[in-house]
Image (cartoon, rainbow, N blue to C red; front, side, top):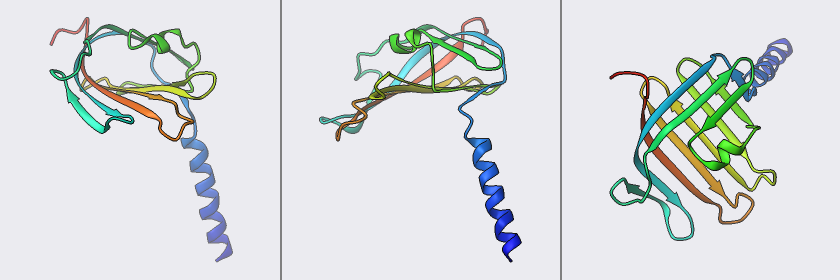
Amino acid sequence: MKKIIFFIILIILISNKAFASNVKIDEDLDIVFNCKFEKIIKKNLEFNYKVFLSNEADISDLENLKIISKKPNNLEINGLSNFLTDTTSLDVKIANKDIVLFKGFDENKNYSESGIINRKSGELVHEVTREIKSETPEKDITFYNCTEKNRVV
């Protein structure tokens, strides 16, 4: 019985290590997307996860969202926000044939931006969290539908 418990604990520890990797660049990418804004969800003192559709929010579409990745650990996101464009160090960088996932924090860990783009469906979710350390952090979750600029649909 002790051996079984030991092996279960060992498997859990090994699998946690395997899933703990925050950097995994499997693809060299140089892609440009055009993204149409669909909706935003806002969480702040005024709104509690309220959804605003494209006709209710003053948010522009994204033209020339550029994603560049180089194996084994380089990822750049340009055209989504000034923060991500100016950030040279992302905490989470994952790119493969299906998705690109990223997350970055400011130096005080009080502001973060993250996102995931599904390369097959073109869905992009971009999350901005402000005042992380406060009792009332603010969050904007923006949804886009993207197409590769050089791909003819």
